[in-house]
Length: 401
Image (tube, rainbow, N blue to C red):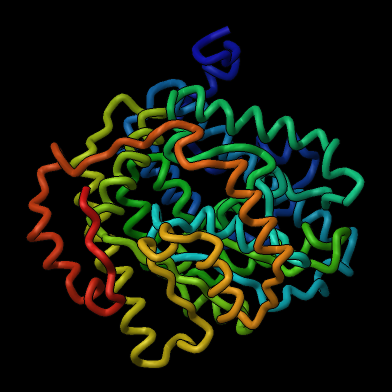
């Protein structure tokens, strides 16, 4: 066995250059399938592989991890296409009025997602479901599906490579998962850039046409609900905020919750998380560079959000704004307000259930996430001025740290 439990053959393969043709052939050989549902993913995959090869500075374990991720997505895409061909009724599955949580990362998006998903008739996609969507999950298989353990082993490997990561962001196969992992079947997603320093791919991604990504997002949801009907999807990915026009094109009846937080506190927390994730695959992680890139990224995203709302590009009446400071004061009251905005009932029994849910997951139970802007080479007040339009627009409170 080699590093991190990788066998010798895998370690040898990890050292080979990343080539699309080789990876596609391997995925086809492993599944016995050959139809990827078109070649629209070739450009993003090629750009990703070039960036991984030339920019990410991956060590052997990092190369192995990303190679396995790409192969899993290729296998998954083949299986999704094959399943839809064999079950044409899946194409007719209606994704009705999804609730989508997005906005600033590190602003309570995950817990807001989980709390909204606890309501009767709501369903959040779980990590193991996005990890391998086919065959579709069933009610009977929710506790025993073998993919649950496989996905959990994969996710726990991420945390084992970075002790203390659960204090920053909790991982588990049965936890709700971000939409980027469904959109990854199109190879248009911010997931790759979170785990790797790939500025070439990331720059292209920020300006690319995301219609295909949202098409594959719908494909995954249709498959997942095809044998478990009746629930309304509650979805989450902070990055949706930079592609809201494409999201509303795909889901015109979506209702969107945008989370807001002091951008300097967000950058501090996010830089800490991304530094940990990237250290799993590379020995060359520059936290200051990450912070500067993310500041520029979010200035752009927040400017887009405000402009789209002002010029009517996105339907402002379908967007709800939630401030992190208000959410932290009383999470249950915040969710109650969201239910009111969304036109959803909020019973006393549900109020009590949410309190019990939170009591079982007290803050800090997985550890304390310490993070700081110190050492990142930033002038906090100068950066705050750059974000002033956004801060003033949404009355965002300044955090002490």
